[in-house]
Amino acid sequence: MSKVKISIDKKYKDKIYETTPFVLVSSIFPKNSTPYIVAISSLDVSDKKILKTGSLINGVTFLEYKIDNAGKGLKKVMDSIKKQNNELLSQLEEYIDTFNTEAFQKKLDGLANQITQFSKEQKKAFKNDVLPALRNMLNSIKKKLEEQSNKEKSKKLENRLREIEERVDV
Image 1 (cartoon, rainbow, N blue to C red):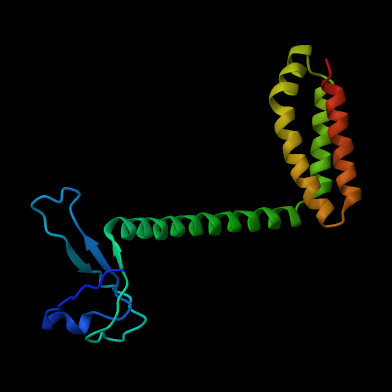
Image 2 (cartoon, rainbow, N blue to C red):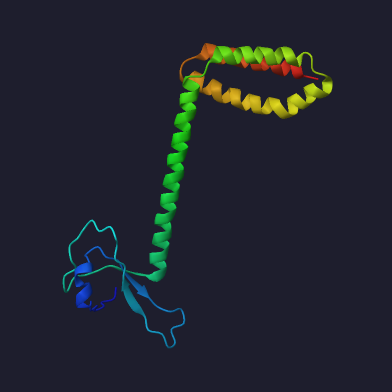
């Protein structure tokens, strides 16, 4: 740990607080360069205790300062993504909570009836292109219904899906 004496110009003395970070800036080419210390003044200062003469401060290198700022920036981005994900999850849960399984089952019945009229090529295309997405969607709905203790509705949806799968078997 180094001991450094810092002199602060009078016009800045009331703008440097105990929480102000001090950053050592030095060139990576030490020949003909002079390192210097920069006080990074924050716009949002929660602790407004003015730095007193003889106080101990914590200093960091410029690289440590940049890494810390990058980490804070990344945290903001991650918090934003987390908030968006939580909002989307809430919207999905609300949609599933108000989901009309009877109307959906009628649509599945209509789809199953249409499949009986498909040609072999249409059944194959449906099986390869549409059925996986339909299966994923129904699995999500089933999972939510089971969490809500609606196992009967979940079982009905599973049976409808199985019926559709059997009808597209070529």
